[in-house]
Length: 213
Image (cartoon, rainbow, N blue to C red; front, side, top):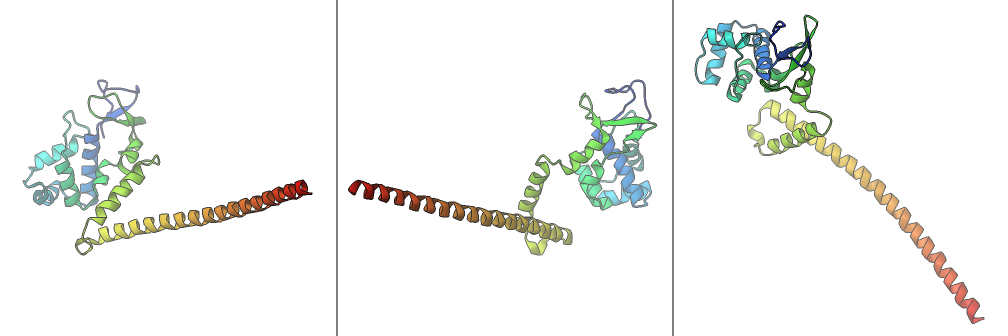
């Protein structure tokens, strides 16, 4: 993680500011340590997924860019390759770094912007929030799984499909319960209306009988 620098862009006087690319660099190093690999072993594992062989110096610079003056800009292709090589989901590489370094808050924001947020806010970026974004992502996932031939699915995809089906069944059960409740309410209303209609007819009949007499 970077040390505090007097020239750093600031939103808080004691904040340490990192970009999303630096978050990826931090997690790239974490992924290698998680696998207990040397940098040479990481380069070797990455080669078939990147389509070329990185030099160890280039790989080392990518990890160090988390606290260096030159920040490596990672492409979607590279982050995909990291996921395949290290056997970790893409979400791993966007997980927040420590929220504080040397007592200073770590703030994350794109380079050149003033839109900074606490490092922990990266969790919302990765997993969504309770304002509906998580549900939208789940719906998109369900639709994507529905397009895949089940015979070609991996074990993990089968597990996701099962959870998707369980979500659908849960929604259906809740909906059926609500339909049953509404049906009961409507029947009660219908019975009340029939009772009102019967009483109204009796009143009308009584009025006619009184007028005839």
